[in-house]
Image (cartoon, rainbow, N blue to C red):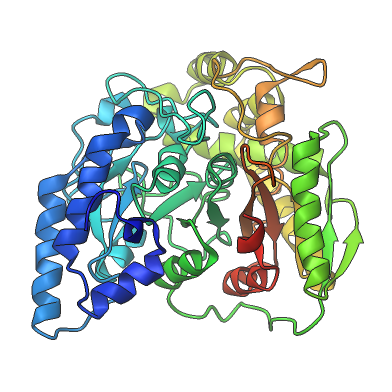
Amino acid sequence: MSADSPALLSSATALVGALRRREVRSVDVTRVFLDRIAAGDHRVRCVARLEPDAALRQAAAADRLADAGGPLGPLHGLPMTLKDGYRVAGSRSTFGLPYLHFYHPKGDCEAVARLRRAGAVFLGRTAVPFGCFDWQCKPPPPLGRECVNPLDPARTPGGSSGGSAAALAAGFTPLELGSDVAGSIRYPAHCCGVYGLRATLGLIPSDDIAPDGGALTPATLALGPMARSLDDLALLLSVLAPEPDPRVPAPPMGRLRVAVTRSVPGLPVDPQTAAAVEAVVTQARAAGHEVVETVPPFDFDEAFALWGLLVGYEMRGALPRPLRNAVAIRAFAAWFLFGRLGDGPLSVSIRRGLLASEADYRTGLARRDELMAQADRFLVEHPLWVLPTSPTPAIRRQRSGRPIRFEGAAVPYSQFLGGYLCPTVTPGTPAAVVPVRPPGGGLPVGVQVHARRFADRWLVAALGSFRTDAIA
């Protein structure tokens, strides 16, 4: 097997099957991926740290266990990269923060531990932006150079799981594990033409991924699989959430009512994005489903503001204690939010959260629960909800925070990039991104599809009935 072998670009599911049948060995597959990354990543810069020695040791151990007839996990011997936003035992884990440049955790967070127990081999860490908080993938010095989109280097691969999506699109890894507070799985999947699932809030453990072993933003952070096919997305989801959740609603059978929101007020979409949404709608109709044009099941502006309140309050708790006073918080907001991410609803709402009281936060959580119930009722009536991920395909790389020109206007950076993503975090629903490529070629467009909370596996299976691979 060579670095240009078609087997590398086959599905993770197929590679796992070949490894289990002993048609290929983990060491050989791992070497091919390592060689492919070493030869091509200078153009993409998506792998922040390649760890060849550790990867080959893990692969050799996987081969020995298979040779001995030992129990094999669902990912046994399969190499993959990991976003640099998790604690991984013995692997430098920076979270995009320069002061963690030499941080080597002693243990895995639970999500990574599940991958390790399933037999995955870790090739290295993929790039993230500063603090894992941007829709572009610009690691701060000295952590690396800006990651680019392998489909068009002038475009962003998205963020914060930009390195993850770029590695998938470049054929450097068969699977990835993303995390999403403001679209950090969904926007990169959209930019790079891969599948991504922001899982139901709380389905996959995320309360121990932070450097200190705690949570980051527990009211909004969800983890999820990223892959090049729906089958691979389902495979990785089965590892990350291995037991059926008792909260999963009984899946609807047969013909479904599919809700579609083509755009929201104040944030129109370009013709290519509109065509991508229509392609998914066409597939839904072809599968026999009823399509209902509708507005979002909750107020997007309120949901965006509520998202910012929760994120800001929890972000303050993650700051060093000397920086939690009002003067320091205002300085932090001016530098990080308005300086790096620009004016707009994200910066305004997070600043409000940074300065909020505990009573404000608890009131926000109560309102969040009401929005969750509201969305659940909507998704009982309409088991699938289709809407754009972003107004356009991947934006051109630019200075973070600078307004984005669209339809003759300068749209605030956070409104343009977060407008379809931050509000849809608030109800905690699972959201899969389906990649659609225009028939004549060009950049892909990712379309969001939501389902009821804890119906993640059903959502991925239901998308298979759309024949979405045929339009991707």
